Image 1: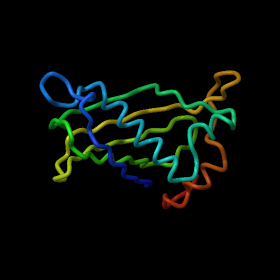
Image 2: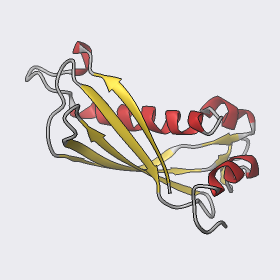
Image 3: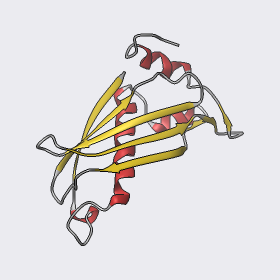
Length: 139
């Protein structure tokens, strides 16, 4: 299992009239967590795209438990519980406040696709090699 944590400070523009984070921003928080998880492995989305691979989101689910508010420091815990065997990658996110209370959970599914023809493909070997050490059984 591969797990990373990323902190984000909630600024005023992220809040709605009720003073809480607008629900649409949680997808952005998941993306920030995913991008930082990739960066922790030594890659950026730009690096993956330079390999001719794109990773579109094909499914997203979100559950709201408690609100995040202006000036909160939230932690986005991003988990990849399975080493991708084919084209599908599923990231699980949990968002916590500074007191450690769980605010939100989300699952985002992405497909690995060749940019030139939009066909599904496997994860680049160099990225898969970096991830293998986090899983007890490799594919």
